Length: 379
Image (cartoon, rainbow, N blue to C red; front, side, top):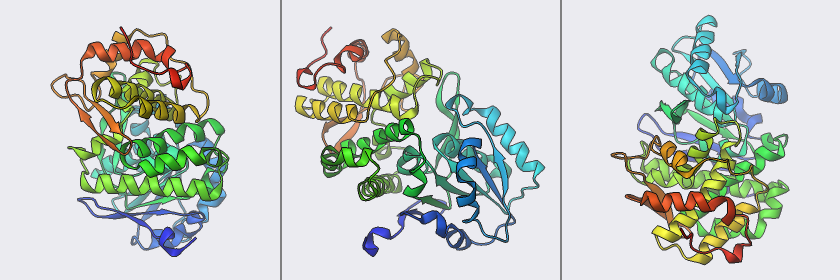
């Protein structure tokens, strides 16, 4: 691997730029990387029991020796991504004597990153934060960009803050013990980047998906690093999601609704997004003129991730109602990110609800058919 591929990826943020270190063995160099951030009065690791039990030895070796970390563990189930978890963790920080000179290190998947990031943003009105993502979806998506938050019963990520970290350490070696289902689910976000911003990445995935699924070191590091570079470019241009950044939500309006109506108990995030991307592809065909062959390629690639939990037995109107709580809604009008062609996406306003309900009604049947039979969703 040449040196150009091992350089850190820089992300611009209003409160200060930060680096994303993406390479195998990055965690072994964490001590030096954290030391370059400055001095801290204490270090506080926020993680889940499962992640900490699996990675404790490797993680402790990367924390500066002079700062023995305080460890605060919480359940990282999506159903526990709520204000009660935030309250419990902040009380734990108080009990450990954390002050404004403290460093919070969030180690885990998307839930740990979102909750830990919001804790860091809220505690004493903000303490330093480092992300160590340990799942594929966290390494390529949720640990970057500074979006933190928790869910309410009414919807996903409705309470939170934009709070960029000081550093992100994305080490593909941390994925070696990741359960197969979580790894496959994370590929949804990688596919998303190909759809919205990089047709070459999409083509690479079509050709090399088997190698990626085997966690081939070269193929996996390539797609992780390329995904990180795309997100870094997007969020550097639009930190607060006022325009361009919305393209990162391709498939998420459908996906978040699926998670919400099933009370975050059926789907992992990536699995819901996978269903959502197939729905968005078909909606793009109906609304944005996405060619049928592009729809078929998107659906075919998503299917290669592996089996997904079945579509819930929920009426389309219930899912549309859940979508009205989505953060992209403006004046109570549904808005969707759609791709006219591979590598290009934008937000579409005023999408007819009748068409959305048609997609939702068709989805359980359409996406189990042979790909070559995919066509328009008829009433």
